[in-house]
Length: 435
Ligand SMILES: C[S@@+](CC[C@H](N)C(=O)[O-])C[C@H]1O[C@@H](n2cnc3c(N)ncnc32)[C@H](O)[C@@H]1O
Image (cartoon, rainbow, N blue to C red; front, side, top):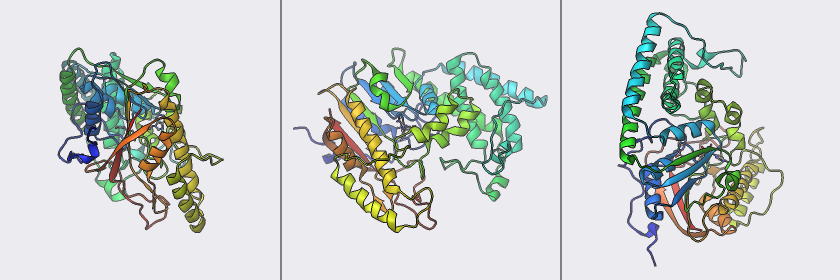
């Protein structure tokens, strides 16, 4: 019998391992997976050239990038249009010389425009919830607004679609860096007054720094994967449609990190992507606005069904009891219902992916965190094992790891009650099944 990974002395904290190498660091994205997790799982559970890797919650494409670096074809699905654009750019090798030439053109044309005081009118319309009036300057320093419009004009003029997309990602990160958005927070959150007064970014310099770093990383990626490289297919869609989307394609390895199930409190992929999506004029604006409501747990279920998990039943009972004790607020009165809705969707997801994996030949790996609701730790890893069992997944191992450097808010206040911070999500479980 082979030794379980969790029983070996392998270190899964990866304190010393960089997370920004190759195309991984092109742009921020909430709750990214540590690339080393994907790398190790792909190395352990694929052997044949024909093995196909699948990530049903692709996010920024970490798993697909690692699959390419290991010569494996891959497919990823995400319902966030910004995530799909980003993953596409990260998995499209590009010639560094062409990028450098284009970059020089953008910068020199932009500087010329600035000197000649050329004004473009291509900024998105930002509305504030309070006044409902256009207020771009609520989010951006005045100087930055002009410079961003100049840069946008030149990025959008690039004819080659893949090169244009690469610079759109660089531009998107620039909009975030120069804005009054608090950088370390993924939800839409404006800096405090004092910080805003000190915030005087030079937009062209920011763009330049980002482009130089990204071109270097793209160069390393393109060199590493070589000319006969594997292919990554990045698809905009809902994982609930995975059987239809994948058709006859049958993955042998699934590696993913599903959403945490608490868009309302900590990780809101849609909110994170809204401003970049507006600047980039992503055609799928409707999909962008629906990311958080369409994602797992985004819609409340009216009826509670038995999902055949004793662990889930027990925790729901505890939360329900606390729901009754805690004074009702409009948005968080029924936390048990929120938790159930998330697991109901996750249950559905296990059913769907059971139709796409190759039977008796596949492995499935989920990276999850055990978040806290009403001060109760939700054993997401154990619940996942219970849910997946019904659909033919045989649990073989769970690796527990401490997150050394994950970029996300560590404290959250799940009940929106001041002076109460929920548990931190600095532990992850990597659940492994045979299918
Ligand atoms: C934790 S993130 C994945 C992060 C990714 N592993 C990375 O390294 O960037 C979860 C992703 O699931 C997506 N998502 C949520 N519900 C979905 C659904 N029903 N179908 C497809 N994608 C979904 C979100 O948009 C988000 O990008």
